[in-house]
Amino acid sequence: MNEWETLHSQCEACRKCALGHSRGRLVFGVGNPNADVLFVGEAPGAKEDELGEPFVGRSGKLLDQYLEGIGLDRKSVYIANMLKCRPPQNRDPLPTEQEACLPWLRAQVKLIRPRVIVCVGRIAAQRLIDKHFSVTKQHGQFIERGDYLMMGTFHPAALLRNSKYKPAALEDFLGLRERLGEMQK
Image 1 (cartoon, rainbow, N blue to C red):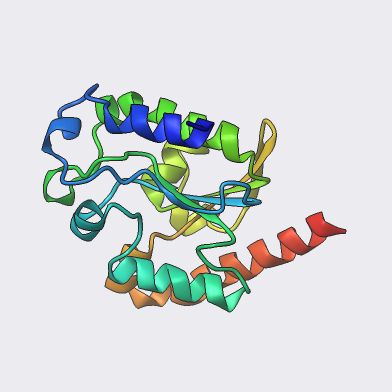
Image 2: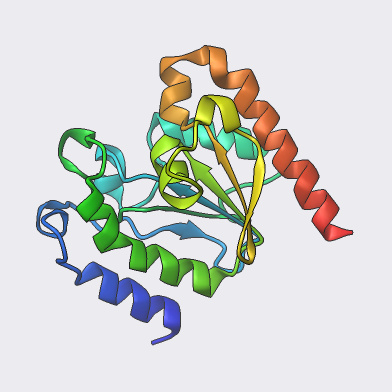
């Protein structure tokens, strides 16, 4: 087995929290394991739990549209969540669940070695960038954290509930495209 297969297998066997016992399917992540950009959401929803892939419901379709709008797709980036198992009724991940799952995400980051990590939504941004991160005020801002450039943006589910933030989210993605272009020079 290669490193990815080993990591996936170990994660699938994980029972560090109750979610490992209640999940339908592990939602490990998808995309290019050598991607320059890693998108990190908070946790799988019902459709993701059913299919074993992150961002596949209505939110995923919207994320795909934003990616397409800047010349990217699921095969050119890597998409994962902080949690690999679905919390009941799509509730926010508990701190203990986040703690139990973060080593899996850290291992993914170590293998991918992305240049940019995009935190999708408040919970991911507050956990990975800054506990006081405000998506409505700080979205689209690039912040250096160690070897990575990080950015927080709106979660597609939030955009589906409140479309007034869609133009701001598009600006975030356009800013990402611009930053990636600068990195290629």
